[in-house]
View (tube, one colour):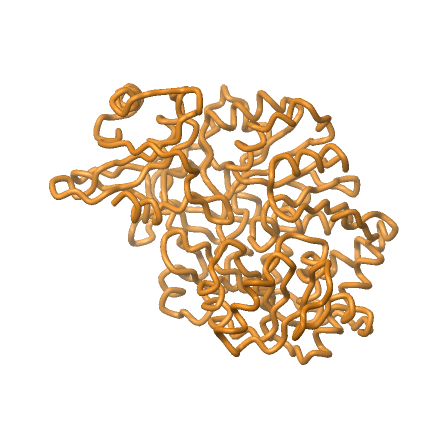
Length: 507
């Protein structure tokens, strides 16, 4: 199983078809393969050997996609850097992974200079931006022009394809070692599950450094379809690209869905080409997905649950989104080839309906955490990933996630799951956004606290919101206190609310 085979197949079946559209330029699949093979040759020319780690710090681009495939073509390991991290956080990951070569675009030139000043580990900087090559860096296009295409290294199965650092929403990041087998498994799986074919035009709006984007990247390439790429998510830019390039598919997180629905362009532009929205990577409220289905009635929705340690392991398919079925709070059922259990603290499977931890056994489970054997041993049990997510499974196999173990609130000995409280809060018409956290309390251990953003034209008191929640959920689950804020909730680059930051701020 080799992900580079997907490029070769794309050339065979659609060589003259458009592979990428970005920033006014486009290329065919034949051209894309030539550039990937030449970039792999350039990497060999600058000293990259088998299993060397090569990092990238960049916004989305067609060159980012070339990097994604050139690394396995060259037999090396990709290390995509988090575009929301500070210099110190990125230096930590670069040093942890033993990276000596870093690709960087225009947006991160200043950070690259800071990295150079604070560590001597990076020997080679490759500039992949649009302007003049900065001093002390190699130029991306010049490297390609001066390099010959090389044969595919044919990395396969359990060969490591990348080290993807976790978002660090609950602590310091860990490098997740992913495999070719895992990538190729869900490339084939999602090709059918997402309804992707050669005429698909897939919009890359989520950050390409994140594994969530691979949900869309790999099956689109496997189909020989077209990648439409924008540098980063902005609702107006996304909608304009959907209209201009007749995008059919996109993958976005719930916060992006919300921003699209709030954009005036959704009613002004022709986005009738859009057939499928895949969403995941963070919880979604029932109200938000209902609003999305109402405003985009011609679009079908698929939710996919996973994490860096085990990607795309459930599917809530379009037919499951019928509101009368009561499944909109579910993340779906195990994808084909995936085994999911809800287990207790000793990894014993629990009866249906009982709440426990999600444990996953799948072809795309990680190899482990880079250079962290102790943490690997805690997360990988006989090849199965303990996710840290709390959920229950109903009689038909649908999984309902309640919370992260680290975000679960224990108040007076009772477990409170923040997503349940957030769903109750979001049903109030004045609430635009919210997050629920546990704060220390001498009497109860922890108390339920809500951080709420109101719609600009709405008003509600703390007491009214608490009463509203108590009409929907038990009193002990309802917030004891509410903090109103004007600024957006702190989000990771994957669109997840960083509750650790909220606990620091409000605790």
